[in-house]
Image (cartoon, rainbow, N blue to C red; front, side, top):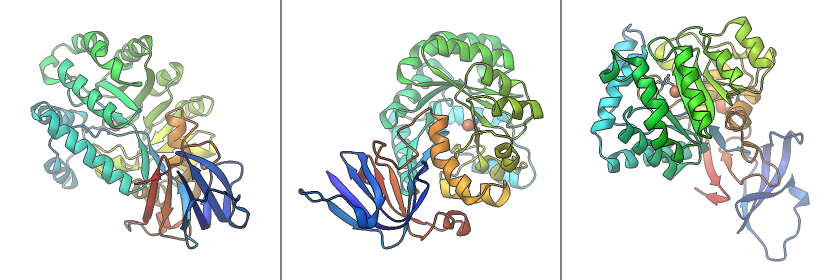
Length: 384
Ligand code: NIG
Ligand code: FE
């Protein structure tokens, strides 16, 4: 099946071709077949369905490389208390664990699908999904299995926090995560993750988790620097993590090490917004040579937004990113954080994942915050 989008006012390719004006894109069999000027579209004897963008902008579909969207319940009361002055702490995760264990598989699946649909309507065409609200073998396995029904980018996060029943024996919990829980979950996952933070796991425990995961063929990614500086960032780089996520608190050495590495720093502005923490200085990070991604971190505790346009708007308004840098971080940056080269770009051969904005330029994503600017979304060449 072939579809041509023509009369595109501004096309963001995220390739050396840069930003094209008066452009057209041809999609065939789920891939981008051709990109170029609207007046140079190749002739197709079979014809193709034609969409007139009427001067609007087209961008790659958002790649949201960090989410926790298989869970039960919510934590609206915790958010309300935080807005009245309470501090965010990792321990809140345990209340979602209780609600997730109590939920049925059908309930969890229905909610997960609803979140994915919500994301798709806001322009997200690839989403990474983490487990981490089960924290026992059976529930963690259920979460990675459900996630794998919806995405190829599944992350086993058994080391999200130490569950209440192991409060007196955190190392015993790490034994469980690196042993039988990993055995049960690894077949359904691509990634292994750990929350390396005060109130969650130490650098040593995190290293054990990541090494056990990589020994099982999973690829490492790490939550670090959310609530304070820690050695987690450099440990992640040393282990070749695809991404360190959060990075709200980084030392100069962390920034230098990130810039010299292949590890992407995934910034999660929804977290700072919803926990009233200071925003990371993305300008400084980019100027230092760090590759950055933007993701929503959709979860019931620290960031219950699923909107990449919202995250872009905050990154531009409060983190010093230019609109084009923020868009790139939310597309090609997310792809780099997932070590993917077939998404996050609009180029021949890439997946036909793209978004037609109801706006003439990508700048409107941050210029018009909170306004639904997604006109149409194609995933694998199919209109969603
Ligand atoms: O990425 N940092 C760890 N995990 C989530 C928070 C989870 C929660 O509070 O439920 C995060 O922010
Ligand atoms: Fe997270």
